[in-house]
Length: 265
Image (cartoon, rainbow, N blue to C red):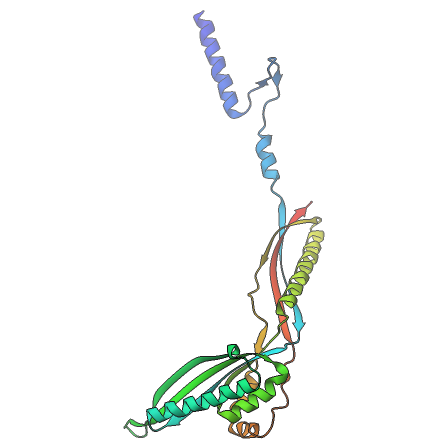
């Protein structure tokens, strides 16, 4: 009896080891043995993870700008600080009055910066105070491009003597950007198909789409035009004639995306 017990114990240990190793036979409710487990459940989970292919895509849509924004300043110098501030304020008031008379709404006119600083003469080794300079910067937005010539020339005549930037924008930017996004998705799918076909596979569904382009309200800045407006000769011409020649061209609206597709073998 004791030998049988020992034998039975060894058999039980062997069976336990087999179970732990995954080689032990399994029994159903009727006691019938079934084939040993091979770990196929784990393999099925691993095999369920699809192969993927990731592509980058970018597309552009051109749109004609119809709006503009001007950033310009009234720069004033006087020997006394109070006189400098007063004259600067008078010129700025005159410019704002002109803008309002041309139909520019108050909400579109912003005093975006103001400063007043002493002006020194540094000739020789001596620093000598010679006066003060005040600068008031105005940002004028939501201007129709066809009014740009008239507004800029009138502003220079009224006291504007520094033009920082003329910026063009498209009111239909959002619609153009959506179109660029659609084109980028189509382009990404064609790229993925070409890569998949070259590897003997095909493209499945899109698993992930990421937008990587930074949002813009559809603008570009004409610094060359600003430089023209800052020249003395140009400013004198503006006092008697329109600029007659703002060509805004086109704005390029770009969308960039990254798309991950399922790769089907």
